[in-house]
Image: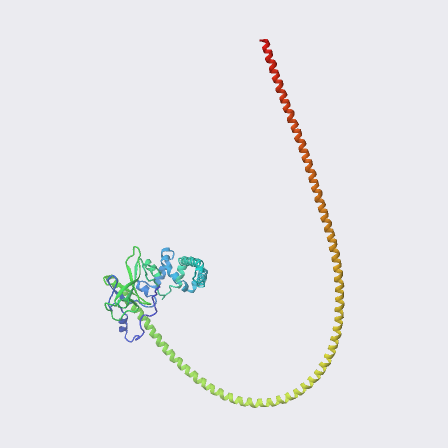
Amino acid sequence: MISGGHKVCVSSAPILSDEEQLTASIKLSDKGDLEGDDNLFRREFYMTGDGNCALYSMGTTHTDTKNLFLANSNDIVVRNLAHLEIVDEFKELPQQMKVKQNYITLKEDLDRVNLCLQNTPRNPANHVLRQNLLTEQTHIRARIAAYAKQKETYEDYVNYSLVNGHYMLFREDVGGSRETYFIDALAHLLNKNLIIWSQINPLNGFEILTKRPGNLTQHNNRLIRSHQFFKSGGNGTLEIIHRGDHYNRVVSTNNPESLRKAVQDEETSIRRIMTYLKAEQIADDTHQKQAQLIAAQKKKAEDDTRQKQTQLLADQKKKTEVDARQKQAQLLTTQKKKAEDDAHQKQAQLIAAQKKKAEDDAHQKQTQILAATQKAKAVAAQKARAVAAQKARAVAAQKAKAAADQKAKAVAAQKARAVAAQKAKAVAAQKARAVAAQKARAVAAQKARAVAAQKARAVAAQKARAVAAQKAKVVA
């Protein structure tokens, strides 16, 4: 994550000693061109370093940018382009966002799982636990990303973070990855592509130069792309250079129209910074006069204080002498009074001691009598408790015996009922078997009679057929 923007980008010395010389030193467009990684040359134009330099470099202002962002807060594409900046800045968000409950909940959940991971050592025994914690951490980060895409969050960030003078951030393109921030969302809304350049020194391990060299050579005038954003159907490309905490505009030397516009904007930026420096000079002069006035007032106050201290010391010395004499007289009076008081006190103590001894003796005798009385009462009470306990045990034993007799009778009665029930069941079963046998004999007799009748009918029928056949033969 890279930042840009600061309060003043030029040295304040010599301030206004030679306005034309200072203006010339601020101007960059006449100091030599820079060569991009596409072998095309680009010219750098100074943009006022008041914190809005990235916006000036892109041809806009803070007010216009804020209005443009808020006017498009319903556009999910814009919020998606910008949200990662909120995710990366999650712990550094403005206080107005941190006091809202949705932020508080996410922050507490993230801190909790991060603390658990810190306190869970990496070893085979904790592998499953750590995997679960990492999964939970991923889910929380997904919730943070969803929070960052919300309209309310987007608008809060624009209102409370992207304030006047707030530097713009971008993510360096690493390994082909191109992540987007609010600066890319701004390019999208301006319908432009965006390239952010950095100046390098190829002779020193491609060191990125955060300050422009005073003298450009073929070795220190090279540019590389730190970040780029492409808008589908975009109308041209905005090119800016990032220098540590500041942005300037760069324009291809073969683009005359953009060069003319950049010259105008550079002049505006220089006038703006000169106005700022003049105001700063006036403020410094005013501050110096105020400092002198304060110094004079301080000296007068110190003189008055010393005079008052001298008078105070004299008054204190005189008062000390008077107080000493007064204290000495008071001390003599006090000592005399103390001696008298001590004598009275000793006499009173002696009388009190004698009185107390007599009272103690009387109290001791009374205590002894009371103790003897209490002891006698205790013995009597103990005997009474023993008699009561013996009676209670006798009553309890009698009740226990009665209960045991009653229980024995109940058990005997229960056994008698069980025997009677068993006998009744046996008699009932015997009767049931007798009835069943009788029924079986009756059925068998009935079946035998039916069989005999059937046989008789068969014999009669056979005889009838034989008689009929004989008669038929006779007739024939």
